[in-house]
Image (cartoon, rainbow, N blue to C red; front, top):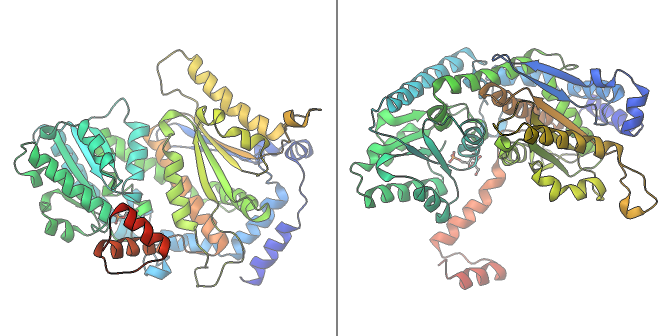
Length: 507
Ligand code: F6P
């Protein structure tokens, strides 16, 4: 840790800790200075409000000093320039090039690959592969969570093709998709950056077997592959014309914008997918061009660090007050925890404090009746993000949506204000922080901006922590041991041996 970083942390740690309502009382301009709106290309916008967090002018100034000392501007420039920012794997991280911002050659290559994807989407819509009513999208982690989120959020009413995302190797997941699809009208998308992931390759083989068993001729003719290793897909049997490649420099959990987004484009139509990319690009431009004092993803990272580092919060919670965003918490879990769940810095030294908080959450109002008790009265301090849209997604009595939003805003107010009571069991301590992200409406562009906001927030946190957010070696050991079990011949600890024996598996 360089000395400027150390002294910025020391100043932050020494700051006083007024309660939230004292912060509002001390600064009449607090709401204005801690909230901001981003306008989007489709005419909608997003409001961000951090006024109910403990960030204040002193925090902002010291966090900005920390960002500068941590080399934020240079690391951001390197990200967008397509430089090697993933040092352990010697790779760039070029997800923004998919949205048109980045190294020129990468942006051009991404545009060419998108054009190829657009042609295949159009051909399928035009009946080139006979009637396609269903798509079973098989992938896992970043090859599934993004498509699942985007389809659930955007394609509920307007899906041109009915998409089922299957990730788990548990055959129950694939069987549930089979039950909803007519094999003669089903296309299988195999989504895997590496085209080697066990779960995905096993599910893909079973999906083809299901087509065969159900009388489909030329089952390979019903397969599309989405991968950074097209030669592996061709070797597996997929026709080259239906292999949609993407660049190796796009990380798995940042790959929704590449051909991994194929089911989104197929369900929404290319125009919808293009709007999704444009919304993300608007957030990219903001993140790239905006000074540290006004930068929205960076500001979110300041709040994250305030709670993780200065207040020792081990978790952060995200509640989507919108049924269409119910998969957002699980999407963010991979993005944030796989990126920043690290114990060493980018140059291999042990970190000096906590890294990623545990991201968890749910959907409002359901979560209010399940876990909010702990948020209001438990012993843990948990910073909360509320995410909602002003325009309803339903066509029912407007009372539904008004009540949904009233509940969302009430929770933030209640967490902050608390309530005194002579009866300790009925007292609310208050001073519990929340931030709110309020979309005008949920559109492809606003979802794109929301996801890109979280990608950049994750990156900004990594810069403040001095860690590499783009590798994920922590997932490998378990995979290796699972392979050893499958192959047989390795002795494990007594507990694992007993479990294997009880289940009758292993060598
Ligand atoms: O095991 C973790 C991981 O590598 C994720 O980072 C990735 O999104 C997922 O597996 C799937 O990988 P692939 O797209 O190569 O199948």
